[in-house]
Amino acid sequence: MIKAKELTKMYDKGYAVKNVSFELSPGKCVALLGPNGAGKTTTLKMISGLIAPTKGEVKFSEKKGGDIRQHIGYLPQHPQYHGWMTAVEFLVYVAQLSHISKKEAIKQSDRLLKRVGIAEAKNKRIAKFSGGMKQRLGIAQALIHKPKVLLLDEPVSALDPIGRRDVLNLMEELKQETTLLYSTHILSDAEEASDEILLMHKGTIVESGPLHQVKKQNQIDKISLRFTENMEVYADQIANMETVTKTEVKKQVLHVHVNNIHLAREQLLEKANEEKWPLLQFEVGQTTLEDLFMKVVNEHAMEDNL
Ligand SMILES: Nc1ncnc2c1ncn2[C@@H]1O[C@H](COP(=O)(O)OP(=O)(O)OP(=O)(O)O)[C@@H](O)[C@H]1O
Image 1 (cartoon, rainbow, N blue to C red):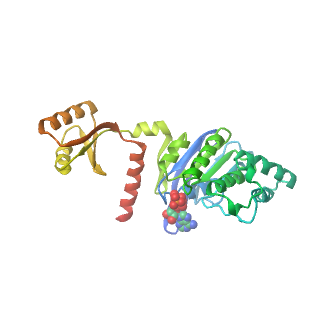
Image 2: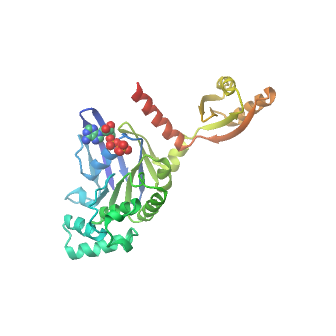
């Protein structure tokens, strides 16, 4: 439906986004995931037509001439409202900016306020809205011209748990009827609402695909151990075992990545038994998408500190 080809944005300090290519299929909900500064907002702005790419292009498959923006609804990261306006006044105002007649604008506003679940607040001043209600109103505004694709920039990151749940539920409903691309730096939000992810790091896409596939591809067998004492001694010993590919300590837990889970488990348990390791925890599992995300974020932070 939407094809981004080698999208690139350069500012004075360098690339904000570099050679980003992906395709959005109809009816999919895709999370654009990445730490702060990864290039998510810049990518969304280029797709929505708000800023021009330095290089690359965005194509809309169903576009038969005209402006691509008529097919795209966009919710910015920090939407600005006139607090004195009511919800319905705001939507009618936005609709009229999209050249919709006043009669149609009122009709659309009523429909959309119902659609996003804040119809009872239609005549309430926006200044009195909660964060979740403001985001719902923002989503209604993005839908006013019946776009085929909805772009949401960090729609839930700034919300409290109730507002977050509210908006995630709405996104879940909306993905039945529209293609959705939303950015987030919160992994659980991406895991909860999306079918596919695009993981950004320093302006490029480092991982992409259906969530289950990305998870599977990045899963590594690991054994997590917690000791009552002397973890460093055992960590060194374990790191030298032939089935072990990597060890790392997080929050007093030693995570051991292995290439043969059955053999590694056997060897570790044998050693633990023989040498009477002071074990508190022994857990066999796999690395998660969160591990991958943290790896990307940490690499990013380390490079920045160099
Ligand atoms: N107008 C601009 N002028 C110069 N640099 C910019 C501009 N907009 C963005 N950048 C830089 O481009 C990079 C990507 O920024 P962007 O806002 O797209 O990231 P992001 O992933 O959306 O981050 P956040 O989650 O913090 O919003 C950052 O280093 C940012 O400082």
